[in-house]
View 1 (tube, rainbow, N blue to C red):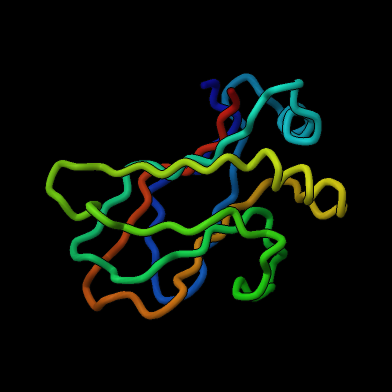
View 2 (tube, rainbow, N blue to C red; view 1 turned 90 degrees about the vertical axis):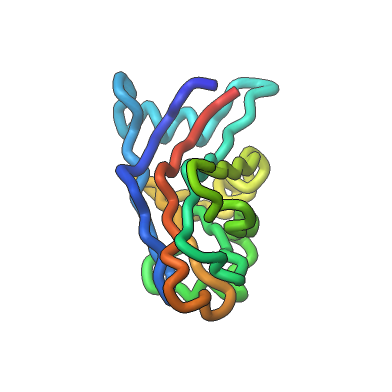
Length: 147
């Protein structure tokens, strides 16, 4: 699947929301990326991939993943921006790097219809509760891909 955009990692998760800005892949401009996200080809899907998940200990919480959450907005209760939930199950196994992908095609369409797609695109990851002490959850890469 072609890479559309990514954020330089790793992304260390803490006790509050963490936002990352996605930058266009090599060969894509900001406006070309925005156009691909605004008007995907017929039958094309856009995926958000969180790769190389790792944790020293199981965090024991779910993380809400949000697309283009407005700056300063509270993640909880902002279902219109919710991509899905992330856990770190099996992410603390030595040498194992878990990956989680979300199909965000329909979410992008809804955000477009509401006129709330942001440039540049951001992804916010927010713990739903307090993570276990010393768990140190990390996301190695945040990527947007097309199929």
